[in-house]
Image (cartoon, rainbow, N blue to C red; front, side, top):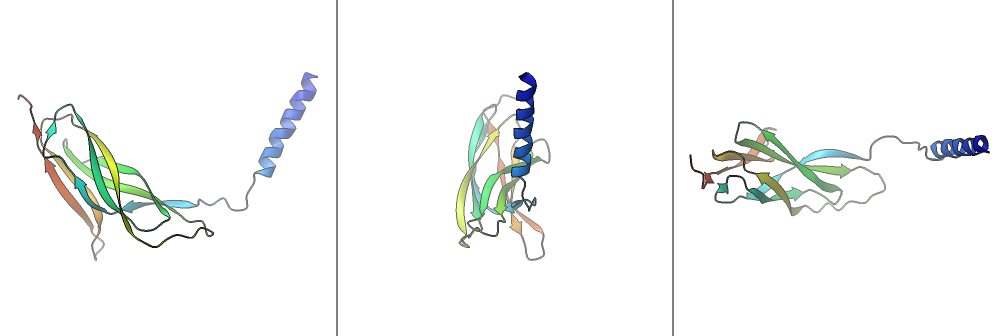
Length: 144
């Protein structure tokens, strides 16, 4: 009985693999950068606190979705921030071409006493060079 049950389970498992095959194994999306318009930065940070920073970015069409932020530490208190999106590439999906401004929240924890320097990616200029919106935020309330 146990042998028959195992044979049936194996047959069912094999049928799943056969029935789930598709003709197109290519991805139906790709990742892209999203242009930041501005960030709502506080006047100062306090050491040890975590902040929700609202970031306004362009959503270029109805098939592009926000995925998160890529934050790169450039110096001890320097951060480059890029908004990342995914773009659906399915042929049978109709996308609106309307560009809209959308807000996403970046959570940031303050762990150093020196002022922080942020550079938010704002797109490329006509020469293809990256452009940034820059903010400097001091850290207050620390006893040095």
